[in-house]
Amino acid sequence: MKKESSRNEWSGKSRGGALGYLSFVYIIKTFGLTAAYALLSIVVIYFIPFAPKATSSVWYFSRKILGNSRFDSLIFLYKNYFSLGVTLIDKTAVAAGKADEFSFEFNEPEEVKKILNDKSGAIIIGAHFGNWEVGAPFFDKYGKEMRVVMVDAEYQKIKMILEREKRVDTFKVIPISEDIFSNIFEIRDALADGAYVAIQGDRLTSSTKNETVKFMGEDAQFPLGPFIMAARFGFPVVFYYAVRTGFKHYSFHFSLCPVSGVSSQKRVFEKQILEEYVKSLEKVVKIAPEQWYNYYKFWI
Image 1 (cartoon, rainbow, N blue to C red):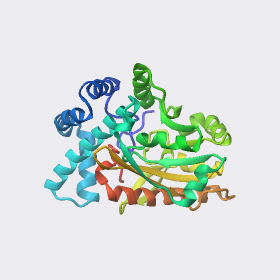
Image 2: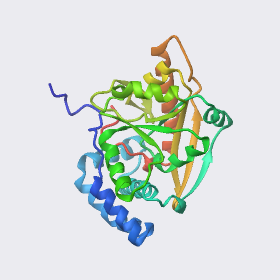
Image 3: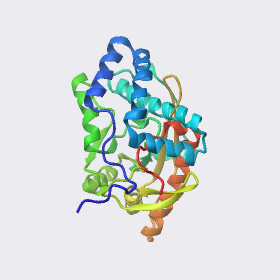
């Protein structure tokens, strides 16, 4: 039986098909990044009226959660869509071999450095915020493989670019359908081999269990899968976000989850990890709310 579409969940598809990505590759290679941004500034206007569900969710976020006026919310809509477009362009540019055109700064607390330099595996939980993919090469300095848990349909877009450009990906993907547990043994083995396993913790789909928590002052549903995995496997948990702070410049934020480890009370433990994650996500979303990209009815 088909589930009600009114549930607060992501459809499993993101905007911007493979053709769109490859078009940006052509523009970037032929005319440069600045030309791609200029084209984006015009194209993005299309999405405000012609992506009604996404526009509705961004409008709600701006008006009800951030408390912006109607005029400011119109500006916020444009900034959010433009910011998403810049994210797509930048990660496409990195995949196409343009990483040296970007500059980065890193916020790595000592306890995170210790974890990332250890021989043990680690679970890295991020969000659909900023641009985590531009920071993937950063993990190479630790000499480990990075495995990214990603919905297979999303990865196919990136894979097409890499194959067309004859580029090697900076990270390996563990593809899943929509349920994180569909490849649970591959995830377990990667962690046991000392790899980083990265996953996003802020997007609900029809196949995921959820937990209702306070986020930005209102009740919202978060998927439990990443936090169940973190609680059961017992590896250190690091929260990671990449914030665009200027023209072709990013700041990477890392924090160690204070309750990561092993606990006999699995159910309580997974909720504690989720709560710590939501606190960390709220901090970065407040820094740059226009860089948070969840285009569905997020709050209850």
